[in-house]
Amino acid sequence: MKTLLLLSIAIAVCAASVLKDPVQGYKEGSRYFYFPGDGDNTIHLVDAEEPADFAFIEKFTRNPGNNGYWLFTRANPTVAQVIGFGDIDSVLNSNMDFSKESVFLAHGWNGNGGNDMNKVLTEAFLENGDVNVVVLDWSTLANRGYTTAKSGTAAVGQGLGQFVNWLVSLGMSYEKVHLVGFSLGGHLVGNAGRETEGKVKRITALDPAGPLWGSDNNRVVATDAQYVEVIHTNTGLLGFTDPCGDADFYPNGGSGMPGCWLNSCSHGRAFEYMASSVKYNHLLANECDSLRDATRNRCSGDLNPMGNADLSKSKAGIFRVNTERKYPY
Image 1 (spheres, helix red, strand yellow):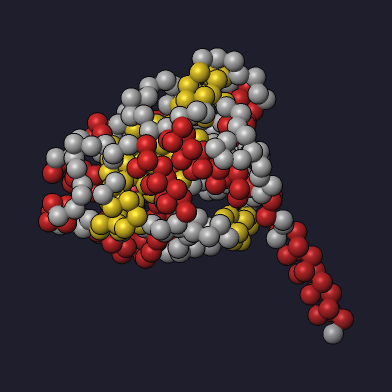
Image 2 (image 1 turned 135 degrees about the vertical axis):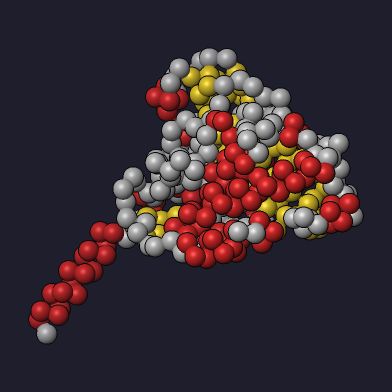
């Protein structure tokens, strides 16, 4: 009995050392870490060594039509029109207008097409301009375990890229395409752009996920589109730290966003900043000589607006803007 008691105590002590406060987030090499779900922002414990369900990934992603493609326009700003991949009639009978710019949105882990990120960004883009907004719902895979969702992100992105290529074959122009993704979705849209051979006009990756992406060649990179912008709001923990786009923005140094006490809050600020900037285009960032300068608030170079909906952006580099604690920041 005494041996069992001591064993129980040892297990409890070990567990306590592993299951740290969620504020600690992820550190490179960690087996256990906390990561927020994109659907309800609930914090989940992740085991980095949990085997990914590759059989499910292959079965689900072999047909990109298994994902949902929901169209919103000013004519239907809140009620989606579902576009079926390969179903030309679903395009012809919708409000899709290829003469207008098209924004594609991709959620992250445990997210879905109707979550806050998609609602906030859809509203912002439609308020700013008369555009097509297509929300990618990949919740069937995104709501599996983190290692499975992460391992399937690239394949879902490739499917989105094939969807974009199909729409281009029907009359859409790569020059009018903007791919926007949050967290795992940030890497997803990178793979979508890669599937178009980097032809899409712009990609914006919103605090692309950091855990397990450090050495993954499927992470978002600058060649995935004509212009790739990355907004980093929780570096070193939930978000990816290193510069990986043409323009990398580190608001408030890239972590610890004003008004946030938890990493999940700072992580989510990325899409909130994006939505605000689409509406107001007011977050003007100074160019930095290095990432070190960005984290230390030593940037005084030329201004470049962070976020917004502009498809003609071209300025590359590392940038920092200091925001306020509350909306519109």
